[in-house]
Length: 98
Image (cartoon, rainbow, N blue to C red):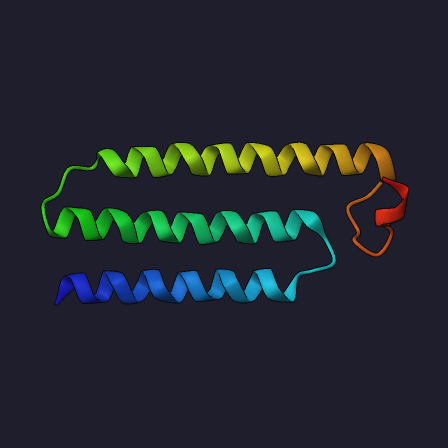
């Protein structure tokens, strides 16, 4: 019963992060924060799932490593976009300038 509550909480947080990602398409920073929220909710559900079935938590460390790499890559794209265009608006960003 407790596992069901945790998985429902994880699914609610996943779908709220997905909704935030789809609704905040103007700023790159808001989209990156929504992606990190989705990754953290997936990590939470993975930890609950692996601990419920008493599996090893090694895969969770691999998942966390890849999510940190994804976050660093997103921040580097954000910094590059701000340096070249001056802001993180997608309306000001033109593919033809790159």
